[in-house]
Image (tube, rainbow over all chains, first blue to last red):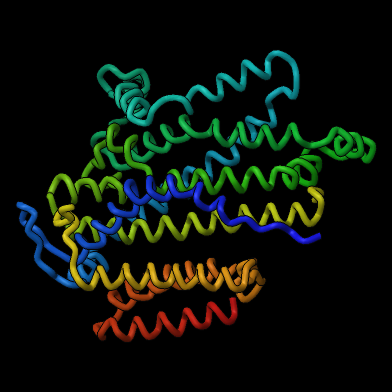
Length: 295
Length: 93
């Protein structure tokens, strides 16, 4: 049967194209223009060529922030993914308790980023904060505003508190979708809990876990508000991630040219990650379609 | 309409014009040969010609950045390398 082609439907995309042009493409074009120029205000710009990119590629400040971003993303993934799976495995599969647990799990996800930062800033203070004051009372030399390790532990703990629920919810959705027949077969074979997890549950959760890992990686890689509110990038520059450094450069120092160059490089890195995310997810869908959803 | 706040310069304008031309050319190509020409190549996952254009442009950005970081040579060489790389992507990926 011949398929009827009607390309008139493309006109329905026009409003979105216009919206994206105003909200993303035109600002991006401006950033590209700024990246090759210098300004002292008053809307006057001077061509500097690739000077800002040369500075950026030799800048320890940029590469240090990039390393902090990568380190932070790796740490939170190493904690949130296994923890999320463990919590999802321990949740009940049915009954009224399921709803209660799922709502409780979803609560941290509903709190705005700046509120999370403020909660943890107060929570971790050594004078009035429940966590900070308790740790100091127990004899720990804890001060997240002074000690680099304490600041990192606090930021990681905050992110784990905020986002592990996402991994839990995704893992749980993958777990409850596994047909009971698989578990019956495992029981008949006398499979241990570990073997059931390793050969049934984990492979069946592969799709949702991939999405969880990529979502968390992308989100943690562009983290800004929470550490900005909690530590302001300190002590020193120890928790200054790329996004924080970018805002400091653009708004704090009014170095629009270098900030534009940095944001373009940052954008390219994010684009690369997004493309990897898109490719993995679409190829996974195609593979599942080919195998008829079985794995 | 006053666009002076966008601080336009000729090189950046040329860059965007080339980008728009590339996308338009892809549209025309798609019109005459619909389907995007999907295939699995060197990257071991399926790519369409749109994917290959995207990868070529993004790689060109990283090639130029690497060139700036590790050499003092003219960026025209980086552009030449980017074009060779784009040809490789279109043929092998």
